Each structure stands twice: as C-alpha cells, then as structure tokens.
Image (tube, one colour):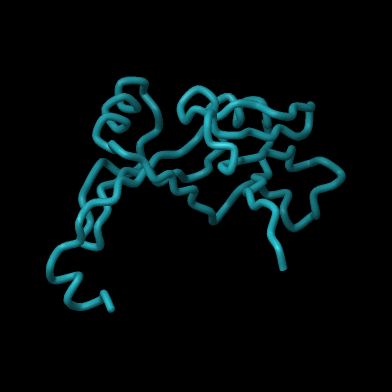
Length: 136
C-alpha cells in the first residue's frame, strides 16, 4: 500500500472555533473551508495537516457524533518552555504544567476550546535509569 497522506479529522460542534485555535496558536493555515468542514495545513510544513468536521454533519457516523474524545494530539516542538510561557500568558486552558519525564520528554498538556487534549512535547535526553531499563 502506498499512503499518500495521513491526518486526523476531529468531530467537533464548532469547526470555526476549533480551526481558529490551531491557526492562532500553532501556525496552521486553512486550505479548505466550509460551514461543516475545515482542513488546515501547517505553515511551511505541507505534510502536517489537521481537519475538523461538524459532529452533526450527515457524513459523520453516529458513533462519532459525541465529539473528539479519547484522543491526545501531540505536537513535538523545539522549545516547550517558551510555548508554555506564551500559552500561560494568553490564558489558555493548561491541564498539566510543564515538566520533564524520565523517558525523555519535557512537556505540558492543554485543552483546545472543543475539549481536545493537546500534549506539547520537546524531546530531551531520557534518564540513565530509563535508558538502562527500556532502550534496546
């Protein structure tokens, strides 16, 4: 199988509100907009895409109409510290403060306006104990 692309499509109540959040805070730009579907692409990184569909649209299966639940979007960044400070200053909904994990992540977790969980991750060196126990 040759895969031509891969992107999450999140079922939300308000596609405009959801899309605006990722445009304003993560550098996405709209490449397709309708009243029930918005497709975003990362500015300067065409392979990174994210889309939103109105949860009540006729094309959405009944099982998906509860909205985006049980998913975490991970954004790997160069500097989690500065983004954390910026997002705190903007009053975004931070669920978990910035911290370092033994497996090699500095990260914080926030929620978008539609309740989607976002993990902002900077790769750091894993602790020696973690490397010894888990890395092959």
